[in-house]
Every structure is written in C-alpha cells, then in structure tokens.
Length: 255
Image (cartoon, rainbow, N blue to C red; front, side, top):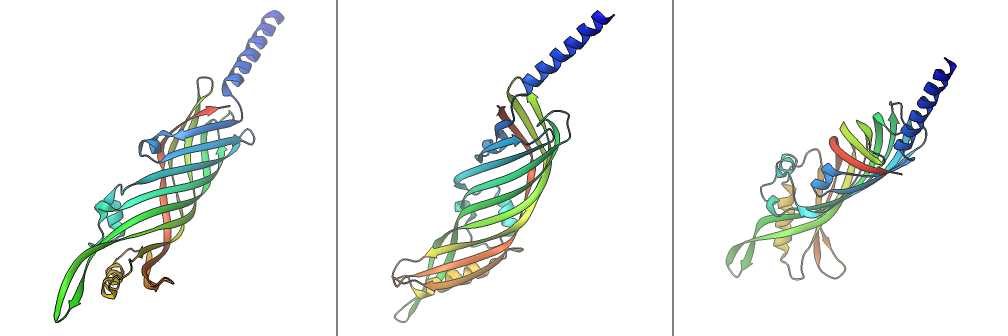
C-alpha cells in the first residue's frame, strides 16, 4: 500500500513540475492583434510581481491616415465647412497597467486591470470657407481652404477585465473583455498663413472655426501676429477625454 502511495505521490509531483515548466517565466511580451489589424501597432511588456499581481507598460502608434469612422467625429464636431474626407489623424499613447489575477496560476486566468493612459493625437483639419476680396469698386467672393495642423494631448485613468491563458509552452493568449477610461485633454491647432495673405481671409477663417459646435470640447480661436510679419490662426482646445477598451485579442511570448 505504501508503495502505491509513493508512486502516486511521485506522479503527482512530476505532473506539477511539468505544469510549472509550461507556465514559463515572469515576463510576457505581447501585441494586440485586433488593434494591429486597424493599423494601431502596439507592444506590451508584462512582469509578474507575485502569484496574483503583475505590472505592464504598453506603447501604441497609429501612423498618419485618413479619419476612420467619420460618423463618430461628426457626432462631436458640427461644422459643414470642415472637410472630413481629407481629414488626417495619427496617434501615440503609453499605458501603465496593474493586474490582479483571480486564477490559481501566475499571470493566468480572470483578471481586473486598472490603468493610466497618456496619449497624443496629431491632426490635420481642412476647412473650406469664402472671403470677400475688394478690388477697386468690386467685391469678389473667393472660395478657398486652409489646413490646420496640431496635436491634442490627453491623460486618463480606467479599468477593464479580461482572461489570460497559457497556450503550448511559451505562447500566451490574452482576451480583453470590456472596460474604459476617462480623463482630460488639451491641444492646439494652427494655420500659418503665407506672407501676403489678405486680412479678410484670416478673419473669415477664424469666423468659420468659431461656428464649430464641438461640445463637450471648448474651442478658442485667435489671429496671432508672428515676429516675421506673417500671421497665424490658432485654435486652442480642451475638454474631457474618454474611451472604451475591450474586445481585444492579444498574443504573447512568455520568458
């Protein structure tokens, strides 16, 4: 009887050892395939602190591209003079995250993850407008467009839930379920007018931007005289910042 007990105990220990070897090390390097498919390229490094906790840092970058999901932007920005078809956007963000795992294995199972995100969005905003040019006794309407360039910085905090699984020897599957973040943003968009640009054109561009309804964001536009004699139309913006995080499929290498 003792012999069978010792054999069973040895098999149990061997099984546990093999299970631990499959789990891998305390580090995971991974990428979110769902975001990669949308050209929002990203990489995450996660490190285990103990059996139930880990910390991670992520970097994501989306190269300059036409504005995706225009209907969402139009729901926040109401101005028919903005040319959304030629709108451009690029972004970078860094996310710092802590994870609390509820599973029995290290960095595996269901988790709750609070996080902080610091983002930067670069924008190119084309605006169509018409100004009146006076020539002698005639007033000539001139249709034109100007491109505002700039960036909006944001900082936000949030949390989400997900499930992480150990696959094969070193492969990890991380499924983001649902979550979100909320914070604040501020930024500047600017059009640098060429020398000789009529004052009427700058004034009309400012008036056109002032007609923009972008609640809950606040816009403040002014005409600035530069030291070289040229002028710029500058729009400062600030307001809340929010996002949804979830429905993500992430794969990683554990080491």
